[in-house]
Length: 213
Length: 343
Picture (cartoon, rainbow over the protein chains, first blue to last red):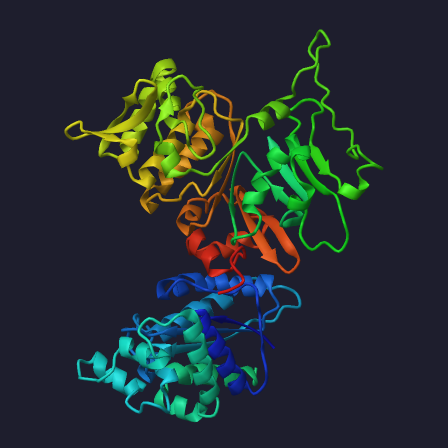
């Protein structure tokens, strides 16, 4: 299966590929070109329609994986799904809407099946996933409490510093640390899903659904 | 107008065709042949001045000729004129010293006297500009020919000549400069010595004069580019390497307009000859300004097969791909290609 990954950095992309393969249970093929690299969250959202169309029309990619950081946006929960109008600030809701609309708007191409999508939101950033199994304070519930004004003894900056061993990690350092964490996490997918039931849970459920569609 | 340039074994351009229009903006990763493509005009004029070993594509499986071929619009050049140049592999020169095609000029006036074709004339005056702030600001000898060199040297002479010979253009240039950089209202000159001159910018408030040496890099680049747009007789073909370099993103529309003024004079109320403009950029902000004109944008792709150029307007489904997001963002993201393989 050929996949394309949209993430916030090449280091994240390497780790996400590792996690995707562990979840689906086989080695996927990451397309080398085009290397999709939107410049931050607002660009991810505005570019998703173009990304979906380019993958559908101009490539033979089977699946699109998108993982973004939640930063300070609301953490997704099931109440958003029930709502007619999804939470306008929830990045997972926004991603789902954008991808679904884009997939519906492509014109049929003979022989081309729809691109599958798997969406995840790391709360508050992907470094929180990397800390799973190492720092029990780090999880979605804790971050949700922080967003409500409660005291939580980590923040986005400390997560990065803890994950990479430096406040100003180079790309090489980030990639090495991300790969090391992803390798470890492939044996802890259930734990990752338990601690990050919405952001990572969404990704894992979407990917498991690929095998059924 | 030159419609395209085909390259064979020319540096990074193993087998590539660059489509061109009145105005062409080339985007692509470093080392994708953008600058190399601009050397084509010089190569076509003087292939023998090039050292085969330095320009042939590295790593070819067997020795091969280097070839550059221009395709031009015959409505502009109504007769045969030189279009290609070949530099033979050195080992073959003794056996086959002539270019493979008869590319000798064939232009004559009513008396049968040969003269240069428009294409040759255009090629003879082409310039690739890659500005250097220090060179732009450098003082110049008063008596030298007013000519802007490729790095911007000689600007003071060019400006002074414009002020003497073309007062209307001169005033229009000053007015435009004031629109770009409202803190300045006029270009003036000073003489550091009896034989040299340098230009200055006068502040709108207080009429203080800043010597070119004291101006910022971006200001110097802006003055140089704007000056070119107001010359009475600019080169027929102009290439700009990163005209946005050092310029604040909010001024990029002005930069585009200056280049458009050269390429599309009628749109600016002018009746002078259009200049064919080719520019390169790495700026998503500058690229944003061309979303409505994909026919003016060329993507330089670099992959295992080598370098190839693609006119954006000819990319399949381009209208759909460009919906909803700025062109610069779409290019930066990698959707259109023309980005580094990594990261």
